[in-house]
Image 1 (cartoon, rainbow, N blue to C red):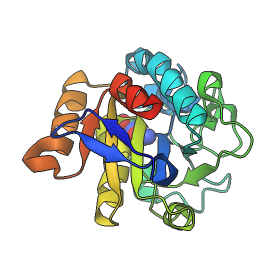
Image 2: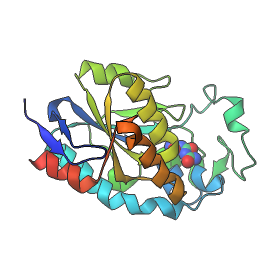
Image 3: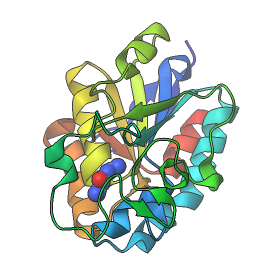
Image 4: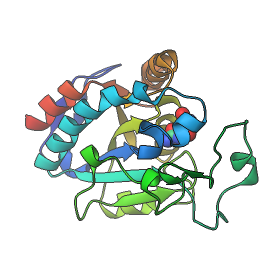
Length: 223
Ligand code: TIU
């Protein structure tokens, strides 16, 4: 069994690349570009741009190491039958889920804003998983896809740290996956939530998993 040794918090972790997947959470225009869902919620979307370059490097290394790469997108069917009223009506945003914005209908599948940013666009054959909630496992076939491939360890990154990344990691942890959150490849509109979100993963001996930098992961994958 080939093994990649990754420097991480709270402790180094050994990973079998054949049983490891890179899971990229919701790197969609709607969260990263002006006029989308993130901005409609009152956020400064430029906060998330800094993770694009390290995430591109991590994605390249994962592809080179032949890891399973899975991309997720948060969003809803055009008829919004899968969008809970409580989610759509939450807060008082200027643009709500389903409303028409500069990138099409907000957080609706098939619209420009719902798609993944060009810099991280999936290659043919890389699964793209559409999820209606914050967590990657809720009402999706992610668990089935991972189990069918014998995946044991997830390298998790994307946006936002304390919302969809955290929810997915918590779901994965309870399902028995080892999660390594790649800290500099996760982003939040709130720097303090990002920092404490990462600390919450690795605290208590790694209560939800591990936290590593992309350099450590790439170094580990290259052996
Ligand atoms: N608002 C926010 O921080 N995040 C989300 O609504 N979804 C994800 O994190 N993808």
